[in-house]
Image (cartoon, rainbow, N blue to C red; front, top):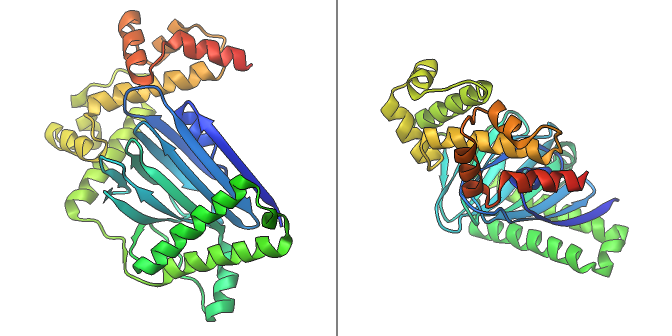
Length: 317
């Protein structure tokens, strides 16, 4: 049974996203300042355990591999987060299905402790233990297991990562690895099989999530074009006020600020990919026509000049 542990310090939102394997996702930095993140990941057999945290607010969007199921303990450090329309303040346990996309607005300092398991292995274990199939959620869910089940999951995940970090001798034995896998899967089943799950959203939350999702998709599809708020409202069929309220509720920034932030994140991604194009060419391609204003906005968001990002990318080559 394979056993693989990796601990990585990240300096960029894209780098953080790429550090979690088996997830097709993209991160965008929302808050201003240098990015400092950590990803700690353990792979053993059909199980993946990972912890991640970053000092900046980010929006995470994407999907999990189709044959996997994941649950995650998310704990907001200060400002609340947002998971597929569900507000996250304090600690919550969320279910991330393999079907469809998810979106998570992680506030600065939010701690994510996740368990991901191959669905066939989980179903087989559920049949052996309970003689029945496991209740696999097919939509993004906020889980409400008994406190004991939640505490057990948190303890097991923390212990597994700690043992991997310390290189415990027991992790080298196949029998110990199998018991670890069984314990983690059993803890997941305990959280899925007990307690009510919250799937439905209040009408207002569902409406705002739809508005933000449509607006972000339109912005991404037309990122190289000039997008004015009236055009955006007309394209997605909403009012200026509803658009403003939705973004302030979900993203905690205005739609205009998000559009600029999204484009700055795209510029940063290109500069880090060791492009031969100049900083000015890349910025202009993403709609930044005023060089000094662009450089000021870029440094304010990422804590470094765009030329420094490009130089780091070239050095990495």
